[in-house]
Image (tube, rainbow, N blue to C red):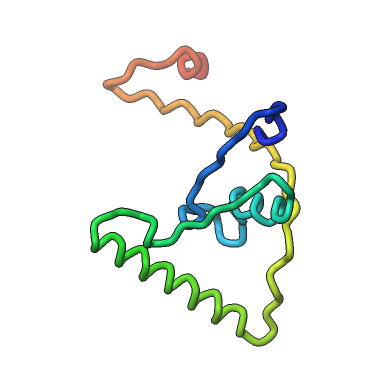
Length: 124
């Protein structure tokens, strides 16, 4: 994380859009996690913009507002659902497991238009 590399007398600005998330359901974005973990630390500030701060085409602004409203209603329904658990106060980042390499695909069988490969001619 680059935030741990900030030197003396320096400043850093991190920006992002917490609505621009394409993670699988149940996974929290790093930006949202940083907001939770770093909230209340002196010297760190978070600024939240809304549709009034974004200068866009009027129709795009209406679309953004509609999705914000949809997200709020969806969250309210989930929180009101009987038996639902409250959201965790903060999540702990889990170490990522490296992906195993995929096995190489088998060589295609020779056809009359394709000469045999060195591996396929050995079995003849």
